[in-house]
Image 1 (cartoon, rainbow, N blue to C red):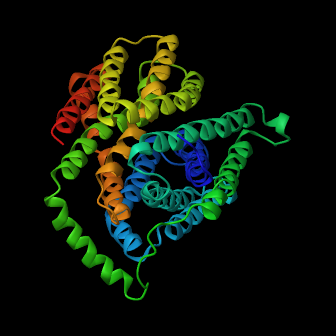
Image 2: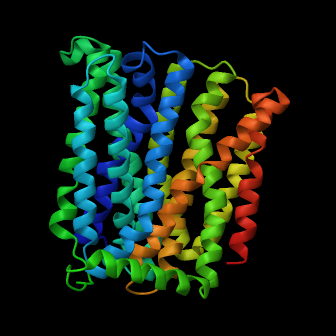
Image 3: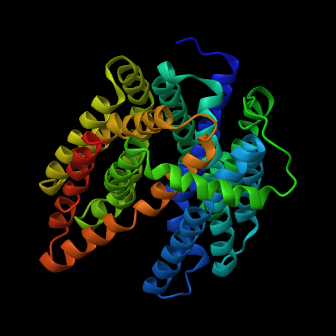
Length: 407
């Protein structure tokens, strides 16, 4: 596949915004919120407020995504909406640097708005894949984005971890200030590497007049829902995706908590997160190539089978070395499953409806990671064993694969 300027500029946005996903969402914000901004609260209270912020932001995006997508398609403004929401995310991420110790309410609000900006921008980023590529190469284009995301997000996260471990080397006063500087570095990184998309990606559909656009978008969304009922491959895929991506996201979000629960050290868990990022870079590229050559479905099936194996191995895990092995294994398939899911869905989307259909795709992605953690938590509580909880995730992968076969 020839990677022209528009394709690379599109993929580079994943390099840009993955810094937020890794350094802020997965890495520092949860720890810093509990230990710095909300240190005066009871542990259970700070956990509740953090969960509330994540849940509320995801719910807002899930509800708004289909409407925003319909509006973007109708007006031909996918890129403008992407950059607008990205600007909101960038500004509020940078704003975390300014928030003083103890101001947990302000930190939570800023974090929520940043998640909304990040996630909403991704609706239009995903949809723009059809403006830079065609069906025969969507797997490799999608994989290039995820691969650059893993590499870029991992590189900045490695620097941020070094800043917090050795702040004096970077001329920073202490660890807390190093974390605040890390948030600011994410904002700068996200902004700088979004510029190529702004300059070199063009929308193929110009759209209609922006006058009366919200009302027209509501009508178009209503038509799309009616249209969707007649597109069995699309809605069956969305149902399968909703199920198996819940399992994938549960593994992503609960892995560190599971490691801590079975007695592993936090430093080892951070290293494992870095390993997953860097292994994910070449693995996503290989999955994209294989998906275009052999079929995206086969690649997704293979990835889901590996996830079943990961859950089984995690059940019997006892050492940091085993956790590192699982981190490598997850890195090999995580980006591949995500990239091939995006490219397969893009190949099913009717022409001229990319953003609104990706609105549904992202809505399901954002609402998916609800059932998995609940099932894991209930299985753990009923059995009294964290290891039983991880086995309870296996049906999500098997059920998703079975539904995908019918799509």
